[in-house]
Amino acid sequence: MKLESKNIAILATNGFEKSELFDPMNALRNEGANVDVVSTERDEIKSLDADGWGPALKVDKHILDVNEQDYNALVLPGGVMNPDTLRTDTSVLAFVKSFFESGKPVAAICHAPWLLISADVVENRKVTSFKSIKDDLVNAGANWLDQEVVVDHGLVTSRNPNDLPAFINKLIEEIREGKHEKQVVDA
Image 1 (cartoon, rainbow, N blue to C red):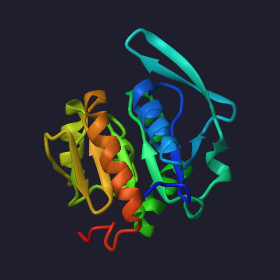
Image 2: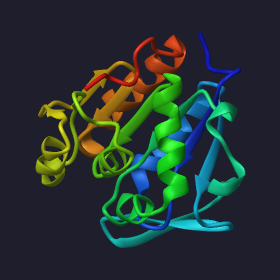
Image 3: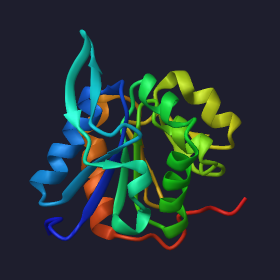
Image 4: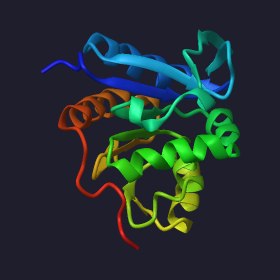
C-alpha cells in the first residue's frame, strides 16, 4: 500500500543533518506521500554534513502557517544545531505536541528527541537517540534504549544516520497504520 493520500510534515531549520532530512523525504515521496518542509525560516534552510555546510533546501511552509490537522505524520531530523534552535520556539513545541495529542505518528532521529523533551512528550516512553542526549531523555522520564530503531505507540526514534534504513522502514509502517489509540502516555 502506497502513501498517496498522506501528507507529511518535516520540521527543520538551518543546521539539519543532511541525510536525516533528505533520505526520509525522498523515501516518503517515492511512496507517493506529499511532503512539506516546515520551518521557522521562510525561504530556505541549509544542511550540515561531514564537510560543513551542505546543500540548501526550499522551505514549503512556515511554522506559523501550518497546523497538525493538515498532516498525517511528523518527521524530525537531527543534527545538533537544528533541534537545539527549534526547541526554543513555542510555536514549534505546540506543533510537535499536537501530533501526540491527536495520536499521529512522529519520527525523530539523532538529536531531534531534544524537541520531544521540550514539548514534554517523552515521559514513560521508550526512545532512542544519539548517545550524547541519553541523559537528557532519561532525566525527562523516558526509557532510553540503545537500538537502531525504537517504536512506542507511533513514536519512531533512531540514533544516527547509520540507522536510517530501519528508521525509514518503521516510519513508513507507522504512517500506513495511521492514528494510534494511545499516543500520549499517562504519567
